[in-house]
Amino acid sequence: MKVIYSEKQNLHRVKYEFLSGEATPCFEKPERADMVLNAINANEGYEVIAPKEFGIAPMLWVHTEDYVEFLQNAWNEWEATYGPERDASPYCFVPARHLRNRVPKDIEGKLGYYSFDMTAAITKTSFEAIASAVDCALTGVDMLIDGDKAAFALCRPPGHHAAPDLMGGYCYINNAAIAAEGLRRKGHDKVAILDIDYHHGNGTQTIFYDRDDVLFTSIHATQITITRITWVLPMKPVKAKAKVST
Image 1 (cartoon, one colour):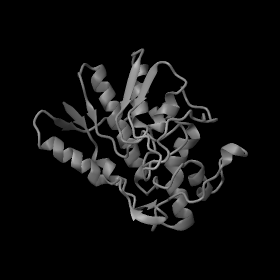
Image 2: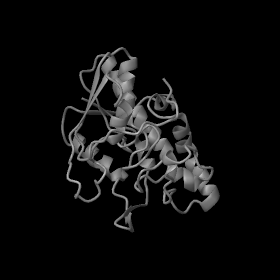
Image 3: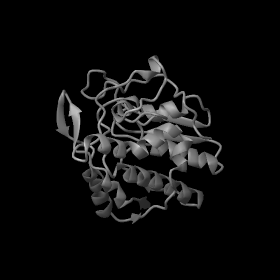
Image 4: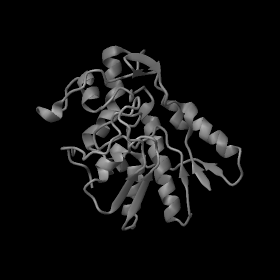
């Protein structure tokens, strides 16, 4: 089996996340991908290849234009305000969807508006890594279309918590949703996503909730008392009001 991976994914390294009220070294880090690669290299039958580049257009298949633009520009806006020493991290969450649905002007407000938790900080090179993860997913799609029976796209940062206009749970752009939409656009009438992560794939569910051409199934923990997964319970999502490109 071919494994699609880009070393550009190492460009995303967040210093801290906030856990139980204190700054904690971020759990989601480049070494997680290294562990997967080490396991792959220790076994026969796998070939690691680099992805093709697809640009940002496929992101707009499942995400709103204003959100993608925010991800592209967030670091520059943060650096201009606070300097380069600290990661751009949300700390003031804006309940704009219950007041005026207006994107805040300043970067502090934007980070809170487009986030649902404090695990998805942004660094100077985060977007390049985010884009490379999308490239891996779509390269896998092309391999399937070209006749491969299976492909493993190693995508980091991950994506299944990312909704059309929200980041969180270490996720920014929904790689699996883009891959599913890519298969649809390549002629497959029905596509299924099986999410086997410990946490609920809330972002993927939101993206495809009102569609009958993509089946989303999530196998996840449901105990509301388990630390750090209080948002995993299945829910009917609130639809993003901004238009998604089709």
